[in-house]
Length: 297
Ligand code: GUN
Image 1 (cartoon, rainbow, N blue to C red):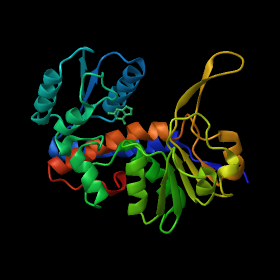
Image 2: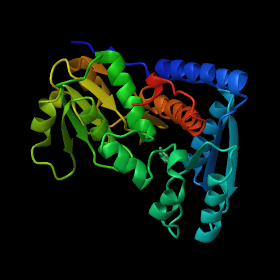
Image 3: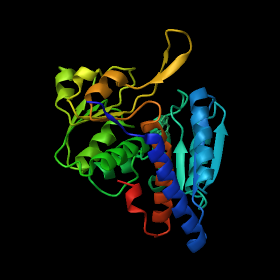
Image 4: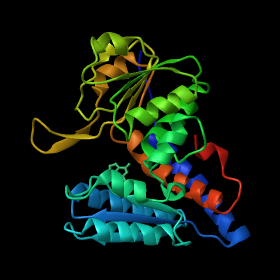
């Protein structure tokens, strides 16, 4: 079998187009422009790249982008004060603090200082609890993007066996909650899982989110299963230079799977598209305006 390639880049462009249409309508009908504040502490090169592209795409869909770049040695008090200011700013509908933070800052405290209704990452403990109990919440962007692609490819996910490899708070755990919400039978596998290949072989849906390059080989994949690859790993090429690979071994998995997301061009672009969708959702909720149903879980 040759797998269908799930084109996350094209899907993300469509989502951003839908967000842009809603943003234009908010402006025309309600004179509201959604605003996203992104806070970057320090100069981690990868984070700088992410923050720059988030800012550019925010403006492209017609929203206001507020970037706050702080020195690496910023005190926790100064960072918390900035978050409080953004919480109280009516121009700001979404707040994202880029992770990881420098070691002297308490990540949990920082995230839990963000007003839950502006927490477009969905990392605040209130949003985690709301998602876990099936209530309306802000949903973490990467798992939301994966869910959108799975729904688009399969239609209903009801009754499917889903195996999520990785138990991070950012991807693995919320992904499992979302799949459960769509009535999948969900297993979360991790580094201590016994006989991981056998666990993965029973899955109709495999979500690989461990951050280990090419760790899932094709012979772990049930013929026809869908592979969603969340990994973005840079590896050395044999002839020099580097390239990006996922957590799944693409060639062997594509030979067995029914559908697969490529790296790059799969899950990655969906994450920022969902960040913009979440900012739109937060803006609608803050103003008691009906939110677009297909842009959230
Ligand atoms: N760093 C890597 N991924 C993310 C993300 O989704 N949100 C935030 N805030 N930081 C990140």
